[in-house]
Length: 379
Image 1: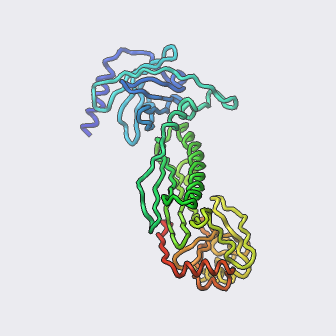
Image 2: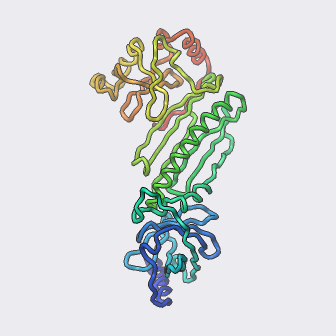
Image 3: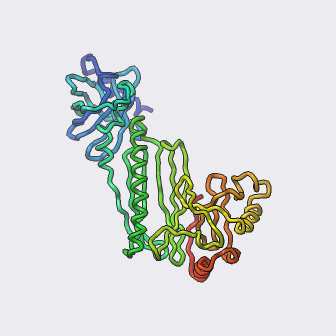
């Protein structure tokens, strides 16, 4: 407590050394600014009279700015208050002031110039959030780089991660690259990177929302984990956790790739009868409608696991109109209805044999004879 009191005493003494000025507030500060803090180049923005942020061009890490009530100074913080901006004065579209580290007497000059902005036609000027504008955010976005990790191995499959982390709110998205270099793995990498590119575009939109609100806590992440390898099949788990832009939503999808063809695996031809595989869940994972014969073994297993009372609610047990995604495990095939309360039923490979096509029986026989490796899911 004494240390904190001493720090603010030093700040108070420093502020008392300067004569009274008409310090900039509200509309004067609103906008985007570029210039220097000491000898470092920075970009800064102020949304209104209470919130803003800035970043060093060299580091591209967002630092929040909050107006201290009833005082002509702004506090800067990432996880805690580290410094203050004082003596801010605007004159002829130039902003000057002083930066001071908490607990120290020395100050650094702030010299910024207003960056011209074009306000969208459908946005009222007084509602325009400068911190989410292209003038401020575009450069920050461009400075975020995809980091390529070291080679890793999942039971004979060599791969490495590609990750992109924004400066805002622990926003992270990743994918994997298979390293075998065969035409098939090159094709799979293309599919993986297409999804990665889409995720980046979506998270850039999230990034803008966070910037507009000057949010730097919480986070959004999309993570990829290899989960299963057997004969020529590789399954990955795609987890997403969106604490900010998705209002706390999280989820997962399992995607299986055929290492023999370089395409996403299609299990619909494994089964006798017509599996309608055209349906897509919201997470874009392929799903198929259960045929009558197959439900004869899925439904009793669901009742055994979840109880008879759940047979008709359409949430816990797979009903006649339900769709499911299909994935492989060491013991058998998993039928996943999806959703928080959806059923996930595992049917042993041997028990499935009467319901499989000739091609399906051949594939399953190979799986049963080979070594299967499975990393348990976090869900």
